[in-house]
Length: 290
Figure 1 (cartoon, helix red, strand yellow):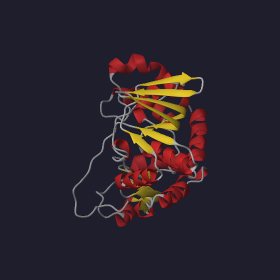
Figure 2 (cartoon, one colour; figure 1 turned 30 degrees about the vertical axis):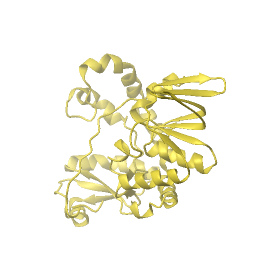
Figure 3 (cartoon, helix red, strand yellow; figure 1 turned 90 degrees about the horizontal axis):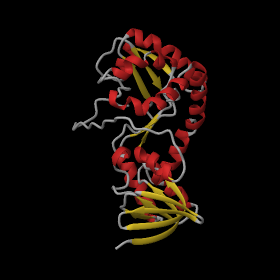
Figure 4 (cartoon, one colour; figure 1 turned 60 degrees about the horizontal axis):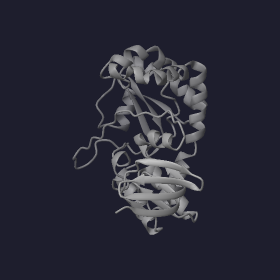
């Protein structure tokens, strides 16, 4: 039997983004239904580094990446490795990526990213307080490590650009790094230290507290995978196995699945996926403090 529901706003995706949207919408008085086949806050919202990366203002596409693009594409161990069979389908995207990696475009994109993430720290502190998660936020900064002296020298220009965009950053020698984090293996280069950076000590626990706060606002969660979106005169119909939902508005926060869903609603989003890993160590105490 198919369940039929009607709501003001439907949120597709119960990850960090979807649940944060649902919280704000419900707090503003909207009736909200969340649709996700998985447990709220699981998946990528649980298995991540927990960094509030307001310092990460450099776009992925830069002149240096463009210069090394051919070798990056065909090195199986590179962060941009692409299967040869996938190249025809990805060619238009790669062309746009190459254009956005030109010097002028890269500088423009860095300014745009800095404007987007500039208030992230303050916003997360307010957000964490709202859901009872302030104890999970850690104010210990973030480190970028450089294994070789040449890589460390090359990073100076990058960090100068970040300073120009308002990012606080200190460059540490290998000896200074060892003093700050004695549990780290030694490096020949050095490190960039972002002293104002904050991070979540337990992303999964933060998601649990967010989910509990949402539940307290009587936000309905249906464990359903949305398979279709249809525009109607008075809203959007969402179809899922065993469920049909009519909503006036829809928030699509489904991660890797968002592009296909957005296309059904008439929005073409240049979104694709990348490989990610989540590794945990069973240790009595962490070797690192940040």
